[in-house]
Amino acid sequence: MIRRSALLFLCLALAIPAVAQTTLNGAGATFPYPMYSKWFNEYHNAHPDIQINYQSIGSGGGIRQVLAGTVDFGASDGPMTDEQLAQSKVKILHVPTVLGAVVPAYNVPGVSGELKFTPEILAGIFLGKIANWNDKTIAAANPGVKFPDQAIIVVQISPEWAGGPGKGTSIKWPVGLGGKGNEGVAGVVRQMAGAIGYVELIYAVQNKIPYGSVRNAAGEYVKASLESVTAAAGSVKTMPADFRVSITNAPGKDAYPISSFTWLLIPAQSKDAARGKIITDFLNWMVDDGQKMTAALTYAPLPNNVAEKVKAEIKQVR
Image 1 (spheres, rainbow, N blue to C red):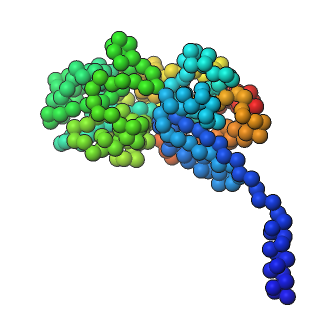
Image 2 (image 1 turned 90 degrees about the vertical axis):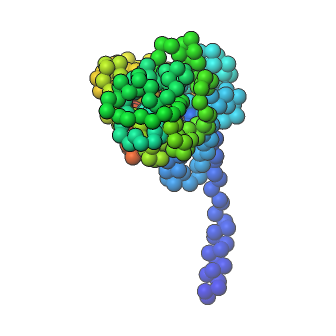
């Protein structure tokens, strides 16, 4: 009787068709990778038939791959240019996902407290004009701190950059060592005495690397936090219809100056209707449930007014 029941159960199990799994592939920015990794895993747990793979290869790589059509979606920390958008065979939507902060993380022997950086100091370090930690300009911003004799790599808003390395998703720094994405830069800074690098806030926090406060447009030294990033987002009074907006060096005494939205680059016309439906469902989940997970990873959630506009934008995906 037991054997007969077991055989019957086996036959019934074999008669039930296996649920087909759909895999979506994306690539791009390292800045939001911890958040995306969390979201894609949580979404898969809730929808076992959906697998979302994401390669953290940098914003430039994400843009190139979405233009080439080799991924279902891209990701970038900087909006695509008009020229890049014109290269695409289909309309590409910029879907803001979270807000984050880039921080000057450092490893200075003998200095454990929080350092202060002006835009001029960061630009000077970056351009190779300030080559030593005991430079008088750094000392002036940090009275009472005894600096050793050492070296650099950082990013910050500065008019000088327009005629120097410029801006974009892939910038050639004139000085310093290279690190692959936020992970690579954080690893180098943590290991090299005297190093400084710019990384997304979560990478500094997870790697226990000190990071400094930065003087903002109002002249205040502000340290990156959920509150100061949200204050920067509040500077956007009118969100552009395509969501391509910068909140870097935002006005307001509480705004952290190196704050940014980060975007998923979504082709409005998917490879097929089924994939389009999956992408739409995920994006709606991201706006409703995913935003509740942001604070734990030190990202700031989308402002409510932006989230509502994103929901309307998602309806374009087919």
